[in-house]
Length: 137
Image 1 (tube, helix red, strand yellow):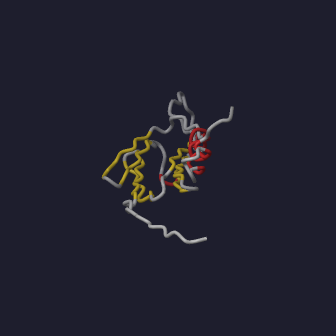
Image 2 (spheres, rainbow, N blue to C red; image 1 turned 135 degrees about the vertical axis):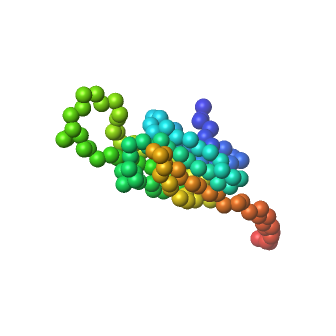
Image 3 (cartoon, helix red, strand yellow; image 1 turned 90 degrees about the horizontal axis):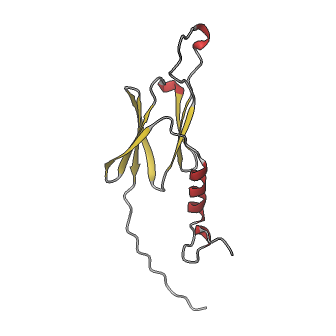
């Protein structure tokens, strides 16, 4: 028995990229740190908010790699000259990824009160009707 995949279905032509995208997202293994919200701010815009308490702006990097928004955080180790009696606040690094659909663009990134806000906009889809002429062979 053969495995029927999204890319091999006879009525779904050209969706191989979508299948690879789903596999990559399933393997990404985002643990849960840092916690985040995704909200729809209008019909064509979104905002991702990550709780990044303890991180400064220069500890964070935001990139778009192969239609994937990647947010990385890495704090410098300043604990060499400090003596902790209890250390309950983790200074761990993280990487959080979000897959972006075609037409979604990353806008501003704003840091306020320990929250990192990233605004996204989606271009309004155009209704395109294309007529194909038939040629004689």
